[in-house]
Image (cartoon, rainbow, N blue to C red; front, side, top):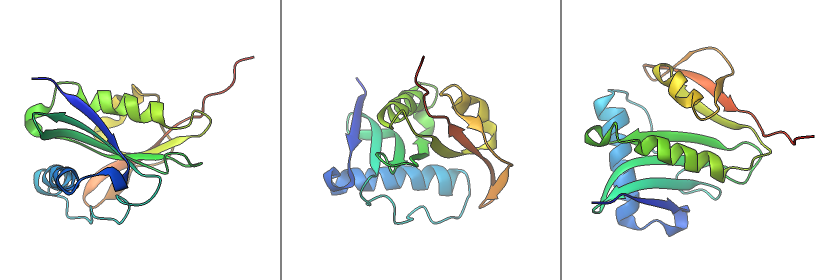
Length: 151
């Protein structure tokens, strides 16, 4: 079995693919983490959004969403991995791809669960503010600074 990485603009997602990513996020964030929040925030289908996925035999194992991919304030979020697929490096693979896809001359933003601060640090993100409660789960704001031109 091999894992296939997909990158989709909203208009390129099939109904089945959209359903799979919303189902995975619902299971991880709302059911597993017991956080009642509006995952359907109206941003999954807007222009400038990209959805990355790691698929195996038609099963979505991991997903990442990038908002404002070509803009001044890209935001990476909704990083979710199926429980049985954790530990395989899938989220790391998708995070590397997501960072690579953003413009190098802008800061990339994300809101991380506090226990994942060091993990996101591996991708160049650093804390940029105080912890905050996001529907019962503690988070912190993080940024990945814009690449600077070398002299």
